[in-house]
Image 1 (cartoon, helix red, strand yellow):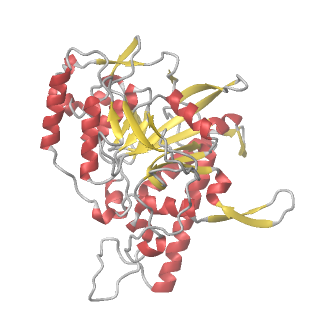
Image 2: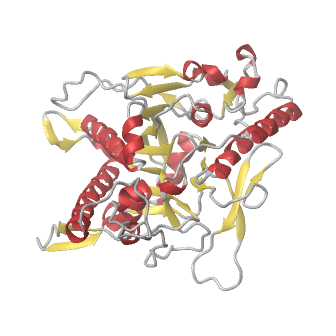
Image 3: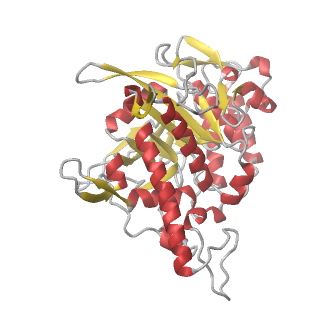
Length: 452
């Protein structure tokens, strides 16, 4: 879920019609007879647990499930860290050299029994990802601080991963493997996985970026406007480097090397503290986010990063925040955009993340007869005069960001998708989650048993 402008988007939507569509779709496809068809958790309650299909993984060597790390930074006092990850071997096409990369997949969920979460987790396991689940113990904090609070939980997780990179007794010396450690973050209730860890690494490294966020159609508002609950688009938003239908940042999906991600989240923390202090001193006490504007009296200011959520905060840091530094050669102080310093960009082509807000099935989204989901959109270099070339892209992750009607598309698409084909099979119910709130592993079939 994208949490910008959260006061418009509270509540859930009942979808009996969509459930009916799912049932019909399942019957038409002959679910009990079609091998390799995706069985999403949005429809598992229509099937007996004993008749669950077995899905296939595309390459036995592509998914490497290792034993969890048994190492922590010095002085943590919390015992062994058991965080699941996936190791992927990438071959450089030019040098033919190989490197191993470690991927930690993270989702933030206060309710791990919802239909959206179960669908997301089933698709994650189906493509070889193991999930680190954050936020189960933060329902009350979420209701108070909204989406913005989850950034700090992810920040704590990244700090923990950084601690695992410490080499020896020197806390300032990082093991070389830390440079190949990657964090993948996705929203928990409205995402479908459609690709493997191998494809993620191959596509991410091809961008030559250190941190990559999804892009979307919906614009980013300014912190100044949100301080008064005005959601006008940012007129100074950076111009994309290519023609794209999705020029704006979406905070619900990103991937990045762990150290640049840690720097980004620290900059977000400092930005929130600095700006909320500034508006409080300049305009008076900050009001509760639940207080609505009233035309009959003076209003505001509000904390723009509670009003606009983590999306507003990361949008500002990406587009406008600068960070001071020292030139290593001259020793002179200078400042540069944070996005430039850490190598941060957006996935303007949606080849990794597709945020489907304001997109229609049959228009931008196409589902082939084989159950592949394709996206068509303009992606040509800026300056092209003669039209725009349209090509089909297969994203690795679909994010159904937006209001209830956008979420409804998720289950329609899930019902029509197909798993990759292979001769190696396992069961959806064997997907494993790791709960950081409870420090334990949880099999998906137990977590989502009410849907099985």
